[in-house]
Each structure stands twice: as C-alpha cells, then as structure tokens.
Image (cartoon, rainbow, N blue to C red; front, side, top):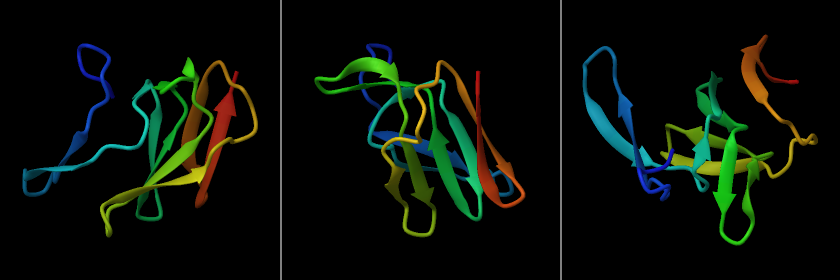
Length: 102
C-alpha cells in the first residue's frame, strides 16, 4: 500500500482473528496498488498490481514477493513472472500458485 501522499508504507498490520490481537509486520520492498495477496503453504505471496520504484516510473509489477510469518521477513521469489499483464489475478489452486491475466 501507499500513504495519502503516495509514499511507501514502512509497516503493515496483521490481525489474529481468534484473539483479536493486532501487531505490525514489515512492508514488502515495493508499494503496490491493487495487488493480490495469496496464502499458500503457510506463506503469503504478493502478486501483480502497479508499483512505483525509484527511477523506474510506474506500471505493472511483474515480481512476486513472499512473506514468511515464521521469520517475519519478505523475499523476492521472482523478479519477472514472464508476461506484461494489464491485470493479473493470483489464486492458490491444488497446492500451487495460479496466475490468470486478461
């Protein structure tokens, strides 16, 4: 996400729905508008959306970032998932990450 002035968010919030506890966790490396966040095998996969990276302008983000709740860290799974999508959706399907695009 981004702040009101389109600045990068430095931290995100997670909510434990069972306990109602709220705590902060680190933001991914790039702020994205309208990405998909998919839970798969105990991790969160951040896919698609539009991002603004320093010096690169803005546009579709073709990287996939992965959040590991056990270590509370993000990593880059791939810089480029192989297509330049106008819109991409991500889903967990039969234990795999499925991407669809128009």
